[in-house]
Length: 166
Image 1 (tube, helix red, strand yellow):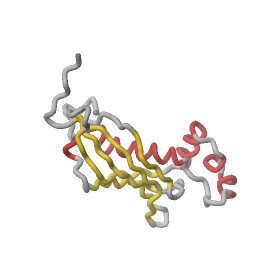
Image 2 (cartoon, helix red, strand yellow):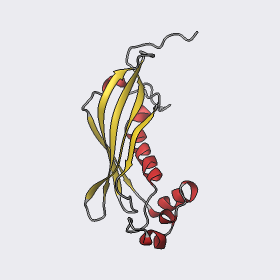
Image 3 (cartoon, one colour):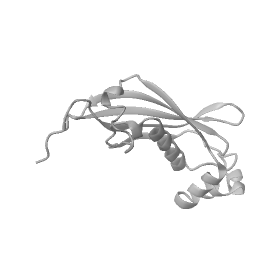
């Protein structure tokens, strides 16, 4: 939760199955692609235009899939997580990098709530399973889904107190 917010804006109850949210507009910058790759994924096609052009699947320098995930995470934080009663995530069930992400693309995220249920062992916590799609607006104006992932989030429930710690 954002320390500057007096109270969370969103709780588990605000993530009803079937709910779709779209957010973000992150322009992918060449220097960010290279900086991330140097530090975390130094494969040649993320670092060098010539190596990327020689790659059989890329048409030029491409962002690391992990960089794409990090950009999506930032957009999620800015759109809702920092104002939510979020308790983190137990993990992802699926992650697919469907298409390369290139400098100049503008990413946005589409999130659909697939399932929401109280956590059996901790009734003050609700589990939310969501699917996220990162959509790249190419410089040509074309939109393309470049990443898809499914996973779980944990959120406090409105009006349900945590048991006292013993």
